[in-house]
Image (tube, rainbow, N blue to C red):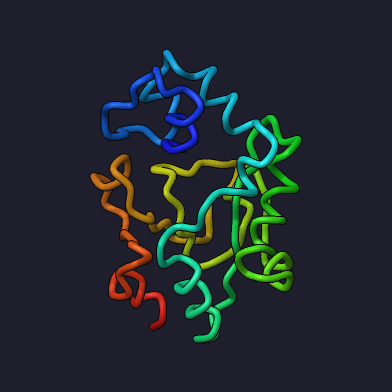
Length: 160
């Protein structure tokens, strides 16, 4: 998001570390600019994978875990939903599109562990999973276990 924002709006500074999950909560004065970026055709399709994440989920699957990609579409979903499928196929292959779950309420997803950067996940059900975070500045202070995809030791516990 930072690269897209700086390229599209070079006159607007993003000069602090994020402390909130939603960009617009850290920069409320830029909310409309962020919306313009992530609702643009191609935004989700062209996101780069997080360093180490592809190797990590492939290793977890090879080790015998039933790995799913659980993601929430944005409310202005016109491009988002399709592009998330395209992204998965591009970076992981068509078979992984069968492992993709799109939902606004992740509490409905059954599983043992949900790795997500959102600080707190709420929904209409009590989750069956334990919430782990992949580490970001806005969730580092929380007590949940943390995953750094480039650090195999941080996610190796999942292999047990």
